[in-house]
Length: 497
Image (cartoon, rainbow, N blue to C red):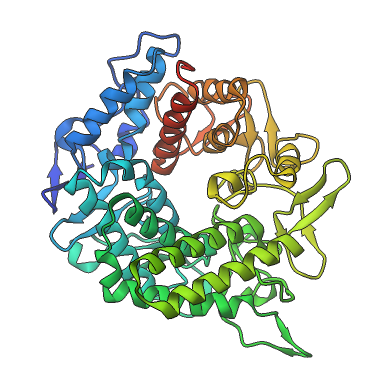
């Protein structure tokens, strides 16, 4: 098989053949040298010539942060995971426009949610590094173009001008989706409101880090934001208008043997009453919702609508969008507080995972963010909020959360996406990020360090009892999020590792 690796250099996509292996293959085998600690963490960065985006500022940051870490295993693991997005996922970058297409890892497509999260650890360096700034600005421009063309998509194919070929989605068959989409432009059309929130998040976060507002004057950005706000209003509406069905907004069905891969009600989702919250067909795991008001995704959307409105207020632009965003955020927040809180028999008042406005509630949590566990990280509540603390106790309980698993190898949140008895290390990191207890944070760090199956990277999920049983050796979002957790932990608790 001919080995081909996509590399970006000075904004021009080029193909390096016969020299660089596919990182999917490279990440599945350990490479030396190894760390001197008990875990013997391998060196998993691709050779310099094979990295998709080389940046001296990030190389300096790796050295500086690693010098604050005493544990040689963590030094090596951090050096592997912090630059993983830059090393392996910049499939195309045009620095002059700019435009950036980031793959999620072993799937050659750009998820709105994943790509936004993949660049968040680099934002602190964008104010002083123009190359990094252009990379993130290019991602915002790319997402704006994608969502302007098809706002209901969650993952997209590379643009034609990139020279990259579209990838066939193996599960994107036997579909009935509306609005219709072009599978040469859209990789997956599972509608998820966290995609909207992620687009707003990377836009406003980049602006706060750099005060660079050029993306706002990109016609596609303004158009995408306007379309998204209009869709949000439509998806707040109840399923029924009196005794008549309201006009459908978005639908998704697929011929499949797995319930999580299709939707109820001929693709429309289960019925809802008006709450102020926004319906979604799929969770951030890309699994179907059971009750359409996904509370943590609505919390994320609420916060990012507030950030969007505040940014536009300071910039004194687009007053109609500014006011509409803040009004929607207020309605969503009110809806969560009134309809998204339930009484648990053991834990008292908790945030529900999903609700429908009729009184039905789903009390659980999922490893993927946004999650109930992540609500302080998202900025919706403080970690000390009593309802959040009750919720945290519920979701981290083997007795009370059916998707919390506890085994001899690792314990934490799993997901229907990876089935039973598999924990996502990313969710273990989220537990640590939302804790102010140094012992709990250290426990999370220890579990993550031991979970790499000897491969020195963060997996999507790992078995609670068998470290060799994992999904995805190359999962860029997981790598960059755990690196965020490491930086957070050593900042709050110097010397913890």
